Structures are given as C-alpha cells and as structure tokens.
Length: 167
Image (cartoon, rainbow, N blue to C red; front, side, top):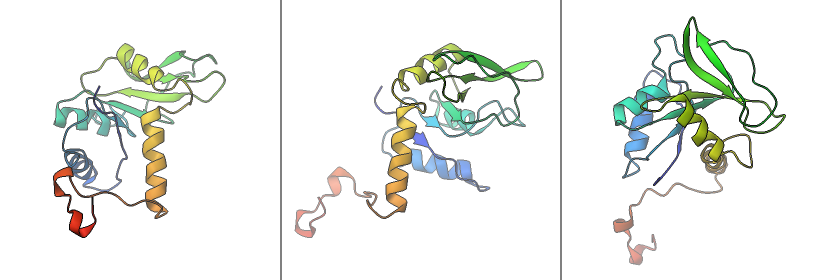
C-alpha cells in the first residue's frame, strides 16, 4: 500500500466536504484511509468512513472507541477476539481486541471492504499498540501542530525556491 492515513472528523455541517478536501489535497489518494468515524453504525447507515470511501472510490475503515448506535457484547480478553455489533438484525461493525487485556476498539468496515479483511488490516497495524499505527501517528502530528512545535508544509516539491530558503 502506498499510504494509509487518518482523517479526523470535523464536527460541522460541512465536515464531509472538509475531510474530502483534505484528502484530495494530498496530491495522491491513499490506498486505504483509516477514518476516526463510523460507517454503517449510523442513523442512515452511511457514516463518514463509508461516505468518504464511496466518494473517493477507495476502500475505507472506520475506527472508534465505542459504537454510535449498534449494540453487542464485548469480545474475550485475547488479541484478535471479536464480537459483532448490530443494529436490529443487521451487523454493522465489530468490537476487536487489539491487545490482550486492553479495551477493545470498534472497527467499522467502510466502503469496499468486508469484516474479515478489515480485521486482518487493523490487527496488522496494532502489533505493538491498541490503536492502529496510522491513527497514532496522525494524532501525534495533530498534537504537535496544535502546540506549535511543527508547522504544516504547504509547498509541493516543485515549489521549492532556494533563494527564499523554503526547500
């Protein structure tokens, strides 16, 4: 895969539009975004993780700490154990224990990805920590940006100007 990122939900009426704009601003689309949002665990069965994947025509996975509407028992305490989350009789996501004896995460298979593949990918990125590595890195970068310790680069590679010292 070329790139896996987190898209932080922006809680506003235009949230999806802003997230889509952020993804398109990367220059190339990720193969698979991890999105801090739900997919089918949503009043209209179309949360941000599903919506962005559909709009961009790429597979997507939502990761949250708790379900939005769905219900289901917690999984066992061993890494890799799952428990289905349902709204009525429809499975919309699942609890996934990513580390032994740690709190599970909710995995929301988004667009063009099934439950088993979503589980496999999330487990791959959680070998060391509970939260998938792409989400951890995005959160760390967000904290550094908010603290003013780093600044976002808005220049593209071909915009380098050595005279101005912005390379």
